[in-house]
Image (tube, rainbow, N blue to C red; front, side, top):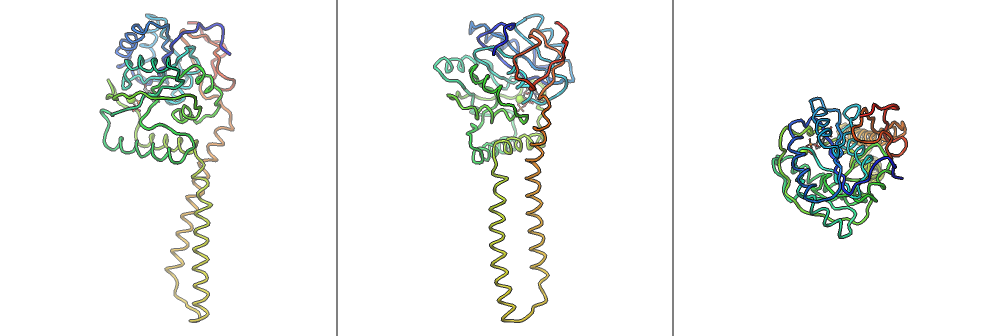
Length: 335
Ligand code: UDP
Ligand code: MG
């Protein structure tokens, strides 16, 4: 399956980058110190996710200084999950470590991840013991989200765990066979299974710049996670329907009996309005939920490639990504 043009390395580090020009120098300084100490052959695959600042210029400069720093320049901003997918598709390492560019995930932890990997684990995730520089609301919503997804989906998505983890080559190859577009990576990493363990760390605040995640984006991200890993929102309406029908039946019997005993009763505006509004509301919610799934089915059925690549620096043009997953311009410029 591996392409023969790319030279295999022991460790691949994958960094999705979006508007991170202020962080890159410090990021590579720390990453290079870490890989230097590890004495392993390595590559650092950076994905420029359509940055609007000078991130690409900086990345190319670093690539020219150190050819082990390789760059995938996506055609536009595809979002972190897809950028990460593109990066994973291009790695060759026996161990692969996705890491954020803003240094919230300490590169120094990679040594510990590798130790666990050498003990025989396939996935070693880094779990946050604490989160610095994040508001009370962000911490609260994050923990609520992990709780909900854990209850609703069949796979166990570990709480307080981002994308910072170590993946064995086996896992990366397995992930290549997951064709879906809604790439909720935390869920996919858990879904593949394999032998998993964790290492604890303290999550620091961003080095420079600010997060691009606002609550609306996080809310949609959470919905992606829930709808692509659980059918409960779809299924529960049958039960709600059952309960409501049963209650209506009781109420109907009550009305019939009362009419028989007391005769026709004209006033009834309140109960009518309540029933109509309540049922109307439930029907709209149900339609909305069904719509969420249909929208996702439509997205998948269109079968568009998940990402488009504009340029590659230090990587072979024809990667080993699965067909119809990513697309690289037919005649990429040689860099
Ligand atoms: N990122 C990306 N594409 C995006 C948004 C973010 O590749 O559209 C990258 C970003 O450069 C960083 C990582 O994803 O390396 C995490 O982003 P951020 O720090 O904004 O998220 P948070 O730490 O708040 O979850
Ligand atoms: Mg961050």
